[in-house]
Length: 404
Ligand code: ADE
Image 1 (cartoon, rainbow, N blue to C red):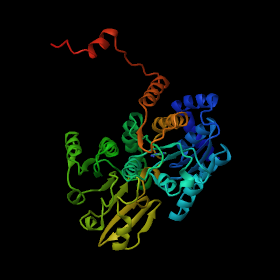
Image 2: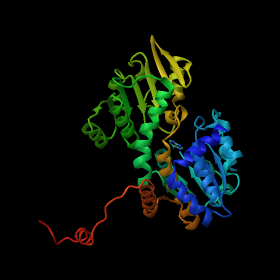
Image 3: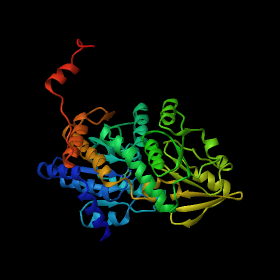
Image 4: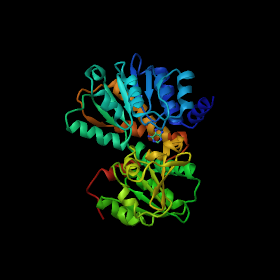
């Protein structure tokens, strides 16, 4: 019951998807096709799956992380919206992969992935991928994996990089991750942020969002980086920039968003403050090296839902949601209006694949028209009017003769 309400609530706040769904209903761009998806299965994702179904597709969906499925939503998507669902919260690694396998065992035409696990699995078996016309990848980590697959000659079908569409990463990675990370941390801990020392690992779009929102709540924010340009950007944005080895000594919270493993290791924790809280917002659960922390300091104890305490000498160290992405494992994922944008890009790119199957197995950018369509539909939906260039201005910016 609550699952259906959550889906209907989300649907109500996703005007761009609503407009796409109306077109899908009349045009049926996916008629006769199967779409297999592996995404964080929560309410907004259900709206995407249902919209693709309204476009004529048979839709199969699994989660893309063992801890991010909302079971109430998964049940409602199956029972009330008629989508084939293979997902549950709290799966073992084996169960998680079994579900991915069930999602793609039916010769899908299109795949939609978040993080690259479904794509990697499909590529293991020609009988699974032979029919795939193309697919979409949602997230930075997945796109990095796709590019490695392409470089190694392992990619066998075209994949579209949804993450780098403007209407995705500018809002989802930055404002979405910023807000949902705070949602996850505060839901898990109920602690105050104002006056605390928050260390953000990584100053990509997600790190930028987290650092800025944490500052907005009154934290003293330090950024750690490996990239000289991003470090200078963080510095000029007014954040302290320090190596993790130094920052961990005064951190009250460390939040990782780097896409790289071993950002917080047992060796670093020896210098941490008592009571430090560690949270990860990156796709995989290896940025905070939880397995190594358990090996070194022993099994942790759950002291509150989604909060595990480790004893490091006399100090307490708290890890949120087993080091899995805190915004979904402890929070509700990105805000609805933000996922409206990301999933509208997903839906229209899937339609583009259905209508323009490309041959070369490469990573492709999302066509600019799709980005523009989502941007303009968003502006229309919220009644936001913008200026237009006059004919004279247009002539001016396309010429070179006029100077001072
Ligand atoms: N909800 C569904 N997919 C999500 C994602 N990749 N990040 C945050 N929230 C989401």
